Image (cartoon, rainbow, N blue to C red; front, side, top):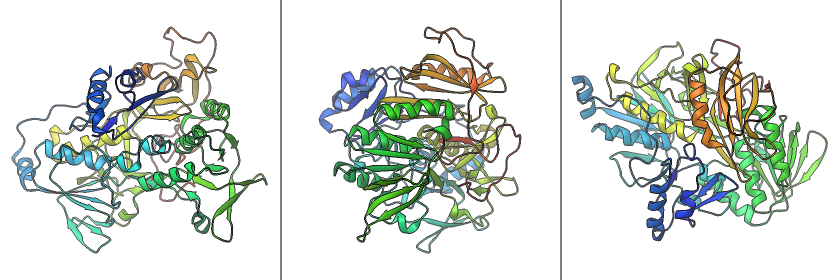
Length: 537
């Protein structure tokens, strides 16, 4: 059987861990880990666990395996051109990912019976990425068992292991590596992101230098960790790097984390809350070095990694190095297509329709998932780039619905950004854009106990909230953000700190590729979007 937990929705009540302790475990106070493919002998317990979940965050082998994007109900009657397209149109989805899978299901569910082709550059069926840096590294599940639930199959022509190399908008064709051209009437781009490799090609090829993005990456890194390396080097202290470091310490593997910024997670949460993350890492035995860069990786005569040279002049003897340098959006195949596709993704409108380089919205090309840049009204309609499971699902549903709906029946994608991370037994969750802020305040809880809510504000209104083991409160803060409530929040709570005033959030001056969600291309104080062709890094 297959299990998926929407960890954005999960609030750590632990009912699942009581009902099915062999499948669900709680680390620390709220950090949930689970086996995504438990033995069928556990089915009864897992079904009871799903039913007992107070927030209904557990989904099993069913079409409703993800949270539905709220929106108007689909109309029974549609204009005849749309009905005709549903019967005989050709839709191509480029990206056999979570977003691509979800979009295909929605298309069929909403009555599309025409030709549907799904193209993916990986040989794998769509799989769940969050467990790769958590359960898989800890040995609680195999990377091969992270395939997403597909019990309710939909009729589609799957082209796996073949990449798209170009897009011809004039003739409406997708160009593939095998030389084939696949025609379409409407196209969904869901190509996502890939791990940013170590920039020195020769050093990246050393035995022991890894990235973490795919099931193959996770399996390979897991094997290296259980082999008992003398020391692991993690380059970059974003969410992936911090989760890898957490797995190392749980496996009792010595680990050094080198971060060029001022603190772990500073690119996503600002340096103030990043300082809390730094203390958590040190509390768990991580050798954390901030404000330092890895200058070179060195190997022996057999091509095996042996040491790293740092910018402060020191060297480290290491057997494994994990390059956790953020992500690269898969847009190279769109070069020359005429779409506004750059380092931060493919620009689209709130209805997921792609935008061309002249700022004109297309009618037949849609975008969903990590590869998108989309405007959000809460953030002055500036473009957001967001990498997260829940956003990929919600955006894919909106895009698929809009692809086969008349203009008056289309939905906007207006959900606030959300993300989570489980590390060192702590559940970190966020709503809003923490880097769209000039101040931050501890609104609830206790920082020394690592159980608190940090509220972020920009020009006197709340723009984000981050919870450390306090996720039950995030729905409340989501409402404040949507209402543009004043900052700092003045509501009395049961665990309100006795003292504490807002301080500068110390967010990066420019977006970083290690962040989960960023306002792209400009600083928060600017009121314009800039098309960026070159990488910041």
